Image (tube, rainbow, N blue to C red; front, side, top):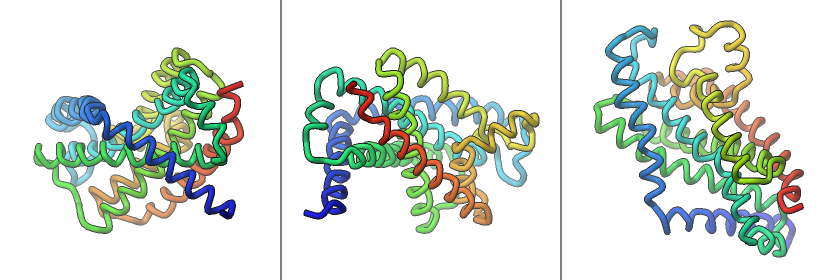
Length: 257
């Protein structure tokens, strides 16, 4: 078996293992849908009535839906490192490291699984958005584009979580840092308000925030149909994902040290 074949086989094995956890306990998918439901129905409903945010020819609920979708991805991915620490504490990670699977395959498999889990969450949000009458642009191209963006974003932020887990090493610290970075990343993006409304310092942060490009890509695919910035968004997400996966891979062994 060649090195490339062994790596691909390892990625698929880890991904399948991670997805089996979801299918064995699918309730977590529905529990995680509660927060997006509140954002769309309560927050979106109130601000949609106030009409204080300039969203052009689109309703605020249309504007908000891609942001809520991006939020659900980051909430799944950023807490992924906690699972890795839990596996270490129960001895599962040591068993995994004793297999011939390359470390890079373990990281790629887990991050790809995070992206796949985010797709399941996205389906629920789509159904919710359609149920409350939000008009979205849905065709083959947009659906495939949304899947690509979600998988890239899931891999990006889950690799960030794994890197942080290798530095912090305990579930308590990971819970704390997860809470500390998810909401700032969410609010320092264009998820719930246009970037033009931000003060200059926050706009600089938003430009450096990968979540902004996730939201921008999803909004283009689902709402506006304007794909002019889509290549830039995908390029930034790909670059950020690659850099964070490299960081997570190089620091991975610190988790068990």
